[in-house]
Amino acid sequence: MSARKSYNQNCPIAKSLDILGERWTLLILRELLGGPRRYSDLRAELPGIATNLLAERLKELQDAGLVDRAELPPPIARTLYSLSDAGWQRVPSILQSIAWLGLDRLDPLEAGPVAPLTGFLAGFVIPLDPLKTTGLAGVYRVEIDGRRFEFAMDQGRMAAAHGQPDVIVTASAADLATARLGSTDAKRKTALRHVTFEGERDAVEALRAAFSL
Image 1 (cartoon, rainbow, N blue to C red):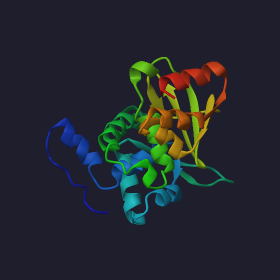
Image 2 (cartoon, rainbow, N blue to C red):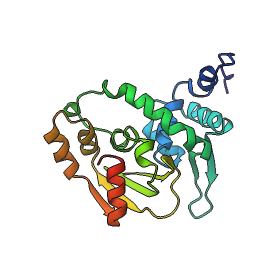
Image 3 (cartoon, one colour):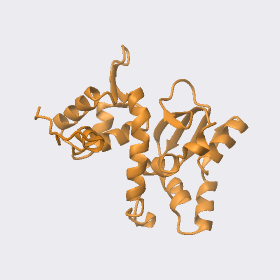
């Protein structure tokens, strides 16, 4: 394993970059924002990362207290990586800010397929407003083009999902992205009509209001 680089500055930004500034680190955290992932899941969603480098980055994030590793017992017998409690407290707001910076640099939605993760970011991470979500509490599952994302809301912030979801959202990545980023109001409304919500009416309406869906 290569030696960890440091800026050697007693500054909160430099200290954060000592953890997050290496290549692939933020993208690994981006993947874990959608819920626990197996090592093979991370490899599949991060094409181009060397297997030894992925292992190294995961170990660094565990050492920093942002990621947990769990060994599931037989018959499942697999390793899962997830954001730790400290990770859930810090990572969503970091990724939200970075996603806002890159939002207007995305290729036009009409240019090609939209990744499920882009749909999740557009639908639920970028619009997250603590002032609007303070009273929202529950567990949520978002099914986007066959990929599952799970999170909870607790006192205005995202948290780890535990238990059965209160609301299940099913959508295509293209519709979630267009509902947020469509070039006209008509396109945004049409895309939003394709998004389905399953759950108690009050829980569904609270989720839709909080995320402007």
